[in-house]
Image (cartoon, rainbow, N blue to C red; front, side, top):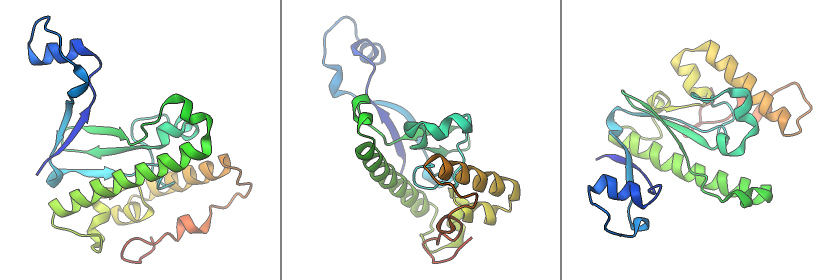
Length: 190
């Protein structure tokens, strides 16, 4: 059982180069390029800020990332050798003119991708969504910070969530209690 990260080829030349063929013409739209191969038995996922406001991006400038909806859709798969940043947001640029539609579509797509990958990782590691150990595999939630014992990251995550809340029109200097009291799949709060 492996997870393949696939992408469309950049152009026909990339397909020809990878296949080792000369100047023969072939439709490159029928090919996919394998970017990464992931062993779910040794991997973790860091959820996106779009689905979990307390999730801290690993590879970005946090201040810039909050303003960019595409960046907020990014989640990471952490393997022993690399961190793979992915996004389920596959919208043309003009879709972002209608931010309500873009936000709903991005949220729905991102949640479905994260859930499917999380489930795959937990099954491969012989866990389910009822085990507390899931928070060592699914990162970015207050639960994962508490169980990991990392108080500093928990403080940064809560501060980031408050900043995100304010950027969406929240005038209060207190974080929405639904974020702090969020229940995991076992019904526990952090």
